[in-house]
Amino acid sequence: MLSVIIITKDEEKMIKACLSSVKWADEIVVVDDGSTDDTIKIAKAEGAKIVSSPQITEKDFSRLRNLGLQEAKGDWILYVDADERVLKPLKEEIQNILTKEGSGAWAISRRNIILGAEKKYPAFWPDYVIRLFKRVSLQCWQGKVHESPKFSGKLAKLENSFLHLTHRDIDSMVLKSLDWANIDARLRYDSGHPPMSSWRFLKILFSEIFNQGILRQGFFNGTVGVIDSLLQAFSLYISYVKLWQLQQKKSLQETYDDIDKKLIQNEFNF
Image (cartoon, rainbow, N blue to C red; front, side):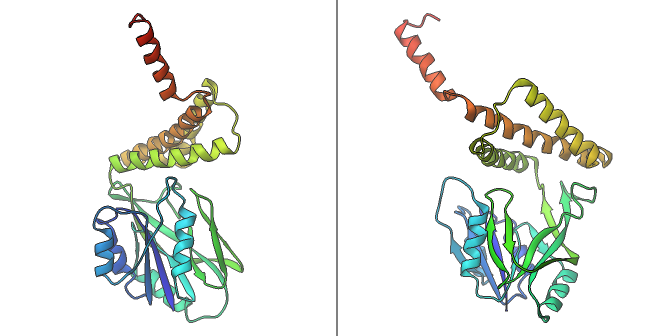
């Protein structure tokens, strides 16, 4: 029996096609993280089992994946994101694996659609993600942001790929960068990252532009490659700006509150 686990939050535009691509599975578990659109309604209509996640302030993707694992009944587990599609060749390869004995995990490559075009330079290909497991092998997921599975047995790679419909518009890319920056900054702060300074910002920014544009070949893959490379560098840069903000002895809001207090005390002489 195969259980497919999908994590969602406000995915009404993506979830139906995702569910259609895995309708051949024995069970589909949708772990919803507080959607306010029609995601749950659509998922229910497609026959998925809905698990509503308790709301917490900070995102924790491992918690959501583990919640789905707790609710799934299958002896095989496949994780699929709402913006991923299980293509027919991948479906057939997975069905063949289900007939075999053994344990462990399987990594699946992703064909990434970036701003409307498939890109296969190093930043986006082969882009392996570990998503298929024999249930007895998967222990849990770890890590809040870049979560990873803890499992026993060997790791193998499948020949066929997901289709990943990512980077669908600039607004969502920037907003996602801000969300991830908040999480990443907190993790760096909690780990005792050295204080941020001007030279650190410059080093991080230019090294990441070089990494994304040259080493990962974004600058050699047309307009979309350049756009994405600079946005990726911006995302990391914002993480460190957020870290700098956390490292201040007084929050910015407290600073501005103090300014207002002094203005009132001094009859607005500044």
